Length: 363
Image 1 (cartoon, one colour):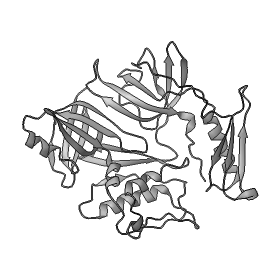
Image 2 (cartoon, one colour; image 1 turned 30 degrees about the vertical axis):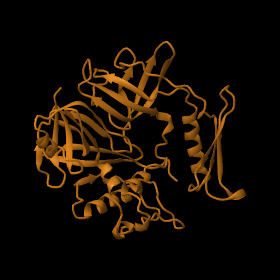
Image 3 (cartoon, helix red, strand yellow; image 1 turned 45 degrees about the vertical axis):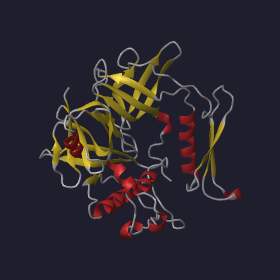
Image 4 (tube, helix red, strand yellow; image 1 turned 120 degrees about the horizontal axis):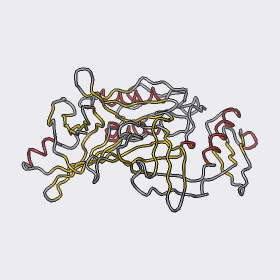
């Protein structure tokens, strides 16, 4: 297991360092977010080191055993004693430093019943069309059945509202029926890095039966399992379009021997009681899960080698300790790799209940 950290000028592509001597490194991707990298540089030549990691214009990559595992833009390089603290974020973090100065993405909008995947591509295309803004980020050609904007309320990008393009981009992926995205990087056939935004519909990742995480096997920490009834419900009332008595509604309920608890799912843009019923059923199934694991730390192990999972994967997690005996499907929403952790390489995984995601349900 060999790691290398490489830096490159964001615009020109000039290589600045092929083996930056970073220590205390941690990095990882994120579901519907940019991901992060942190590390330390202890330079013998401080001025030279600063040119290798110039914030705001330097790209950094993580290579493990010849494969690129992470890429992003350095945003901070802060001196702290004899070291330089480095912080970087993935490709969509750049969108949070940019605005729509022309309005409607320079004529690409407004949008009515548009695929959010297409709007996402248009946001990135507009961002990179402006001089000195081309990071050569490729966006997947994925399409989805989700829709953004209505005839009554089109999706607009008004220049006078001045939201960041990153906020507009991230908002596209927040509704339950939306696609997923994550940032990634890989070598092309000529050993050049390809900066990429991956889009997935109805989801990124897959349900994995070939890997698993278990206490005493590859989970190294005493992972807490949270039991809370704050979000628990056996009854979900989904409401859609309309007002007053004309408001559409669907209810999904089961009896499970527990005290009845109810939740309202407000979906003001959803039309059709069949769709509302599907959404209510999926929401109820997710809310009936008692017990959640938010985070685990794992070691490299044949049961699930580091690098064998992907963003969005559903994995089986088993936690056994003096307080609990938990086993359930969890979705990987991000992770942080610690290449130099005591005892060897490890990864901390961010998890969410797999049942809380509604794959492929459209409006």
